[in-house]
Amino acid sequence: MSRSREDPQNAVELFLEERRPEVSEHTQYNNKGHLTRFVSFLSEEGIESTTELDAFALRQFKTWLRNNHSVNEVTVGNYVSTVRAFLRWAEKVDLTEEGLYEKMDYPRLTKEQQTRDVSIDPDEAEAILSYCKKFEYGTIRHVAFHLMWHTAFRLGTIRALDLSDWHSDERFLETHHRPETGTPLKNKRAAERQINISEELDNVIDDYIQYKRESVEDEYGRKPLLTTGNGRAYDSLLRKHIYALTRPCKHSGHCPHDRDINECLATNYNKASKCPSSVSPHPVRRASITRHLNSNWPQELVSEKANVTSDTLEAHYDIRSKEEKRKNRRKHLEKL
Image (tube, rainbow, N blue to C red):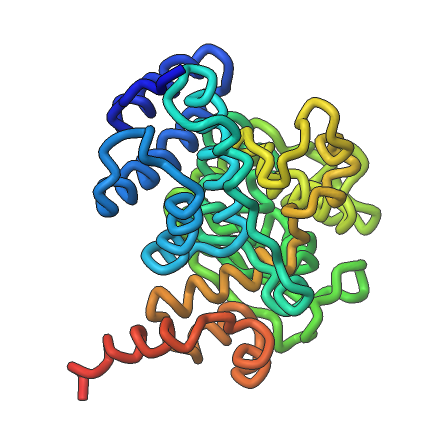
């Protein structure tokens, strides 16, 4: 049977329309974003029909993403998952060759990348925040993730916050080393500081306090900012929340590992850490620090905000490529 010629843009629109009743609004939003970039790539390559798609073009798309949009391998995997779903659909309606989607491989992380460069892509973090805003607004996990992404706080610092540390009118948080009542900070008194908060996060925290926060005290009579029905939220609970939110299937509706979402063990909240793409709080903090650096924050200010020395920042947290560092330095040339 001869295949039908179809403009990629039209094919994508048909796919999205057909999928609309089957997926959440957030998944549809992500699908559209991924496929919009896919169509842009095809246009640049002069591919005018779905019948022209082949394995080489699919491989080049992944390279194009890395070179033009600076995405990490986890995010490339999310794009692959969306495009594969589109290609499966296209095959069923005779718009592509049989089995083409199987020729689009998921990226593989090296052991070195897994141990050194575990992070979270800014696009993915923003997708998680968008998901929270629509579906889990003002929950403890929304606040915990947003705080970590915005402030680059350690998990222990977030857990240690009290209600009295939050100054909504002036939009800032202060951190305190309180070892005698169960919440020491890693760098002790040197970790005490005041951190400005964005208007958006300010609203999220205020709404959490008003509508979601359990009005309880901890065992020392303090009023924690993040609470459960039994008192201050434990590290283990907050860690589970981060693992759960960073599963791609949670915020995008796709699995970059080609697993059946209905059968995957990691879709269980308590097993979220089993997802190969989910991350613990530390990679979120690392990515937040990198985002600050890429946004042209002076290193000394990032060091102060994240409470980490410049040497440690350079050795363990600054995961920018040489090219990214060079481009950031260029912004300062005109100041000389």
